[in-house]
Amino acid sequence: MIRHRWDISPKRAIALQRQLAGKVRVCPLPGPVRTVAGADCAFLPGGRKIVAAAVLCDARTLEVIAARHVVRPCRFPYVPGLLSFREAPAVIAAVKALPQQPDLLLCDGQGLAHPRRLGLAAHVGLWLELPTIGLAKSRLCGEHRPVGRRRGCRVQLRHDGEVVGAVVRTRTGVKPLYVSVGHRVTLPQAVRWTLRCGREYRLAEPIRQGHLLVGAVCRGRGGALMQRPGGGYNHDV
Image (tube, rainbow, N blue to C red; front, top):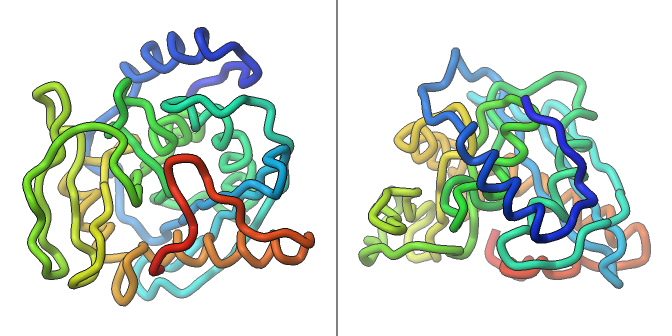
């Protein structure tokens, strides 16, 4: 478990990322997974406030057990590679608001597939000391071979000679996801749980439900989903 200030300079944030990356653990899940949560977020128009949602699901049926959302001010500027400093405080608050801690957390973002090996999923996993997987819709770093078109096809994602994730086709003929370890899980387990939680859609169901909740909250506040830099919400979920 880590603790630090979020309102720091980008230069200090980069140094902190490099320091925290060494604390990420790539290891087998510590026990059985009975519940899995998904976290998603979006900015309200103007970009000054962020809405984050966390949805807790039964790991076997993927039925929703509980869902929570928070609205928080955004206190960190947009800097490529430092998005966790903008988004993680709200995501952490939403996950902590759930009635019980999940056995596994899926985050809409990168884990180790990050230039400094500390994307949103890794940052959140360290803060909450939870097994966490990063599922991103776009590539932040690395190279990979072409991915087969059928669901379940996957290839390694490599950066600077290191395997940092996997590119996984979660739905036949639909763009793949970039899957990486966040914390306390192995990459093969991350791939298996991504496919296990994404049965009919491109996104894993807990994250998809989080995305739907974020959209409903934003519309209820008189706004619409504002695109996250490097991501986007107009996708086939």
